[in-house]
Image (tube, rainbow, N blue to C red):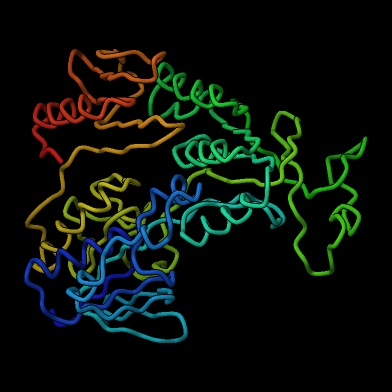
Length: 413
């Protein structure tokens, strides 16, 4: 291969590019990124960066020496708009085209947005620019923040906003936060974390609509009168109205100055429609990251590998080396078989989970206690450990994770 294009200047894209070079590829390397930033670390966006404890410069995933060592052509602020595998041609924003002998799709995922009229003060959190815009709003004084979704991103944003002294409410459609991931007993622990820190938690209800600021009418929702009166003072024609209320599915209304939607993501594959590359909740690829076309690989959040799509930092970092090897070989000579692993920092508690839990698994606390906010628990199925969960027990978790990997015949990571 004389030219390889990595589409996505992300964690997964960067580590694939580094792997290509470390594995001996010395041809032209082009890295296409829709954002204007070089690769940066996303997990701190909802935590240290949002609270102001970390600067944008400290988020960088590679230093100047590593960037220079890649000897890559960086096309930042450039969006991939189409792919023609037979001619191995990428169509880029601005009408540019790029021909490459091999391609790595690392375009990640995009946040799901709430339907309805776009309103000022409504945010999603995926990119550095998203986080910077939210941080700017939070710096203007104490505000009422409504976080929609109590998954990992939603919980971390709620934690950060509470740390900054804001009035925080979390709305979760499931009966408990992180119920699908952790099960009822451990999800109750996460619910307690919110309420322990003064965060109001509404579970078992979704969001029907967002409404602009304005007084609530007796026969309708807030802002129902519409027009300039509902938009508030200072609004002009063509300007977005500002959010003022969140209407819940059960009929309640929550006042809101800022709304953060953490309702999940979808893989960024729109640009691949019609390309012939199989798509099904991501780019369909084998356990080695190769698609049906061996000149095209997929890594990170966008990849649906062997029937599964992982949205976690560790897999995004590690799959690149495997995909790079297979892309250079022109066939799958190695597969990725590490245990699923992720972590989350909420209200000063580090939560770590590794393994493959099912809803029918039982959970048992083997160290500490949830009441003390420090414990190690194991999920079990037919007497076999399937997953391990810890809160503020990093050393115990690391040991249990390695034991789980060995027991399952998987490489410890």
